[in-house]
Amino acid sequence: MTQPHVFTVTLNSDNLHHGHLILVNRQYPIRWQTDDGILLNRMRLIDGAHNNMMLERTAAKMFAKLLKACNAEHTIVPVSGFRSKAEQKDIYDQSLLENGQVFTSQFVARPNESEHQTGLAIDVGEKKEVIDFICPSFPDHGVCRMFRQRASQYGFIKRYDKDKEQLTGISDEPWHFRYVGYPHAVLMEKLQLCLEEYIEYVKNYEFHKEHLLVDDESIEIYYVKATDTVTHIPVVAGESYEISGNNVDGFIITVFH
Image 1 (spheres, one colour):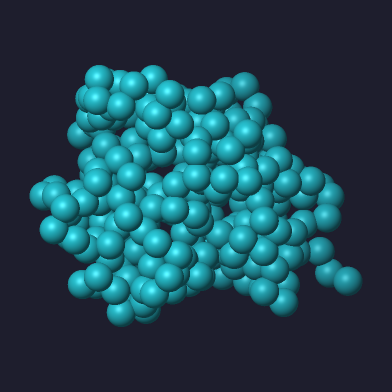
Image 2 (tube, one colour):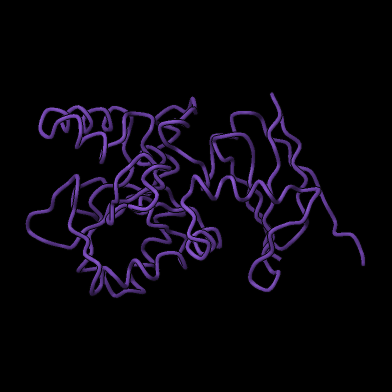
């Protein structure tokens, strides 16, 4: 059997905190030093319940495709997308005042611990005249169920499940979806893993060991541990590849053959 061609990509330590698969929670907050202006260049405007709603470019494109696939452009509305650190702080502080500590700790992340600051998370709701900004209505029937069932094919996961609350630190949120990309969303759904668990699961497939093969081996996934300043990442040659930091300790490489 011939050995696959491998080339090297060198990334600095800051890249560990960027990519579609970064884990953001209380234990692993946002660590990038990116200026808001630079961050906004990665975002794209989307139509939502409020003006100037944005998502990360790839997430925005796939979200639009998902809505179209569900024929839900006029029945499901984006309620909240990208937020700056200042906006997240305002939402957190306002919820403390209006809803108290218990509710806020269950449903609202502290500044720098919110996925919304990455532009990869979106809250969606049924299109109604009055929409609850913190807990929008997104029932498990009709077009909302169809959206949830098809989400993983477009790279989105329902991020916070009631069965995973001990791991995520957030209560069940039927309305909150996170873009992680394909095939990762499909794998997480199939294996019933939340993002915290999936990050650990992929570490079983290091570069020098067996790789995770999906879609009849047309997609190859593996993990490379980060080093202190720069990490030399071996990339198996294919038609295309994606590298994402995990915001914990390494990089996840996805090769499309």
